[in-house]
Structures are given as structure tokens and as C-alpha cells.
Amino acid sequence: MKGEGRLAHKFHGTYWCAIVIGFDSADHAIDAQRALGDPWKVHPKEPKALIAALDSAQLDAFKTKYAPKARPCKRRDCRHGCVDAAIDNLNHSVDVGPIFDVEIPTTPHEQCALLGVGT
Ligand SMILES: [Zn+2]
Image: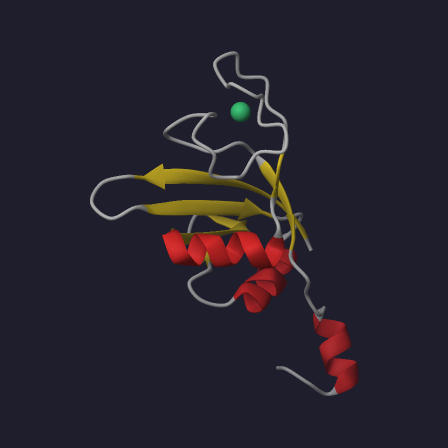
């Protein structure tokens, strides 16, 4: 399931970040949520998107497992234009990361039913 995401840094107290990932449809978001598990939730205001608050360890695990890829950006003050950058690189901005693409491997509903697994 392809998603388009963005991370917001939270430096107050212990570091954490909020990540929102948008999908093509609400069904896609639900499938992706099932694959991602806690703490990912469907966005309360946007059924096509998932949202999560991650601490540093959870963010590292997300980056390792799903290899989200930052899109090169055109911000003038972004030092390397986010080429080959991490989704949480601070060259881009201390507030938000660059837009990134991520692929969440999922098993579609219909396939679960055929295989007799899941709900
Ligand atoms: Zn950038």
C-alpha cells in the first residue's frame, strides 16, 4: 500500500514526533493500519490517513522496517534539498520533515477471506 507521509518534530521534553501518512482510499488506510499496528490510528479528521506519535526508538524501528524515502525538496534554506535524506533530517526544518513515500506491505481483505485468515 503506497502512502505519502510527513513527520513533525516535537522537542518539548523527551523527543517524539507525529507522523501522518495519507493513502489513496479509506480502505487502503485501514489495511495499512492493520499491518502497522499500534500506535497507528486512522486520522480522526481524515479517513484516508493514519497518524501516530512515535518516540525515538519507535521512529527508528519504523524507518528500519519500512524504509520511508524522502522526496527531494525545493526549500531554498534546505541544505541538500533532501536528496537521500532521512525523513526526520533537521536540515529541512526544525519543525517538519520532507514529504516522504512509503510502501506498507498489506494483505487485502478479499485475499484474507480466500485464505480463511484474519477477520
Ligand atoms: Zn528539504
